Image (cartoon, rainbow, N blue to C red; front, side, top):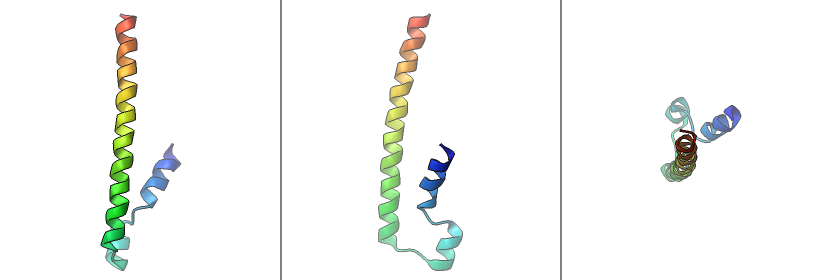
Length: 61
């Protein structure tokens, strides 16, 4: 899972790269929007997992 997170981060330039090379605002906005979408989907999946765990916990008590 670590390398997936690293790959995810590598798609966004570091602050140093931006300072040295600048950036294309349109391109960056598109990348950030994609990241927001990915994080939203990730949170939805986590919420589903939490509900399943809560149901299992209720049944176990």
